[in-house]
Length: 285
Ligand SMILES: Nc1ncnc2c1ncn2[C@@H]1O[C@H](COP(=O)(O)OP(=O)(O)OP(=O)(O)O)[C@@H](O)[C@H]1O
Image 1 (cartoon, rainbow, N blue to C red):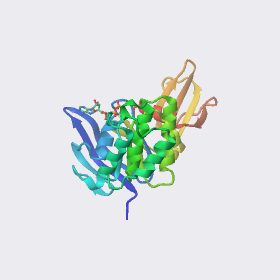
Image 2 (image 1 turned 60 degrees about the vertical axis):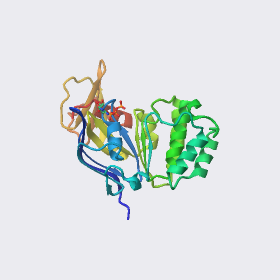
Image 3 (image 1 turned 180 degrees about the vertical axis):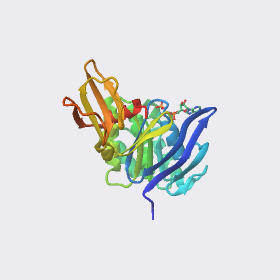
Image 4 (image 1 turned 120 degrees about the vertical axis):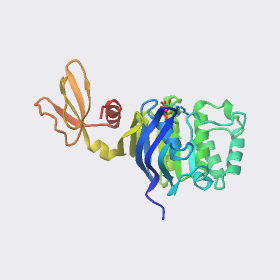
């Protein structure tokens, strides 16, 4: 029986030289979900993704992937993982058809027909060299190759960072269509929170190499409020996550139930994902 956890990360730290890229990280990535991994530049997102699929070993702690403790070189587990790296590396001298052939040779369960159909739908010619494709098309080819492996876990490291808004939307549309009604677990790191909101149902937020917020997005949104009212420079109370101030007004993002001082001119409204993420990226706790 497969477990309800795709990746279990237990007290993991990763150090490069004297610098800890990730520290004291304990986290379960639930199976069958679409998980957003967010954090500022250098927060540790790529490091966490690489650790989760065994591309780099942890300095301390343990990782288990699809119910198996991760040790370097476990091909039977990695064959169940699709990975799209940040810069969509493809063999630029290869045609798209040659990339597919290579994928088929190196993966037993490679869905060649499905990959060809997807590329045809996207209008990406198989005979073109990948190095001549637009950035958006290269991202689509990289995603198609990863999906063709029919992975149980699909990991995408900032797949849309270098794409224009239209190409971003197309990429996300392909992704949503491909994973709808499947039980594949998807982990997607991105800076573009608006794109994540449509696709993801679970959130992991990193700040300074540590997990600061994790949970189902609906629960996290229900557990927070934004309070808006006259400017207060010295807001400090239990449950305050972050405060932003205009000339005359302040907006406070608070955890529920908050012990915020009541004020007749304060209004509470539900937080959206962008407000939540920004507050925790800025916050001190
Ligand atoms: N191979 C490496 N050698 C040395 N330091 C590294 C290495 N990889 C990452 N780091 C450092 O670890 C920290 C986390 O890096 P990481 O790439 O995981 O962050 P990130 O959240 O993915 O950043 P970005 O959004 O900019 O891609 C950074 O300070 C980075 O400089």
